[in-house]
Length: 274
Ligand SMILES: [Zn+2]
Image (cartoon, rainbow, N blue to C red; front, side):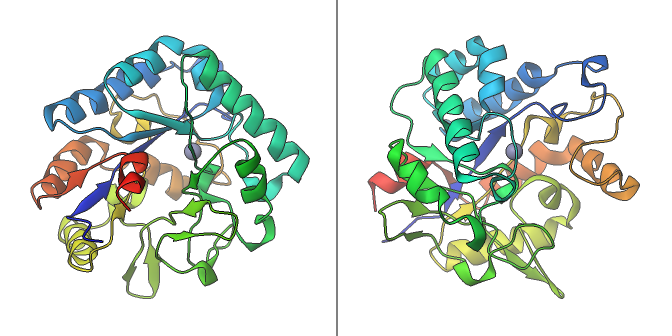
């Protein structure tokens, strides 16, 4: 299939304060930040997929309704944002069930997709796909197909594929930067790597007729967020500095990707054309 510069731009719709110490001391900026992405998508007449944490849907059902009304797709991103590899199958089942329930309560129907928190599905928790299937999930974007100290699954390979139970897994796009294989198209990597290298990687994917998969968070473009230590980075000051790095240029960089004639689409739309 010709993928025509497909850019599977997606948002992991979550509250950056989740699991942060004293989170309620800081402002909830989910709506304001998400609105910037919605405006940008509208400007480019594009629809994308929002992988949404159940807790966010509980707190901001009106935001979910706005996203749906503007024609975007809503998919799952867990209820409590705990890595899958740190859960038992039963804990995962309960979390996914709560995620779906929260999305439905906010107005979503026909929920088809799932993304694991921090791409945390690897060989150890392949069982998660059968649980997804039982809930009617038909695709997932939950694997980091590289060596990683926490959750990588290098043997998965870098191309999307249909698993034996029928679910299609879309591992995050990677490219090689010196000795490292990095998810250049999302989050902190997209902000921190030099612009020309990012664009080179996108061009490589498009040239090889592969969709470029990305993930962004509401905070990735937030230049007004208060300063605090983010969760999940072991109190590492350098990583925390990177969390804030170059947020001001995120939209400018995304515009440069669009200028490569990239076409944003939802996961469901992409799958419907396979
Ligand atoms: Zn997430």
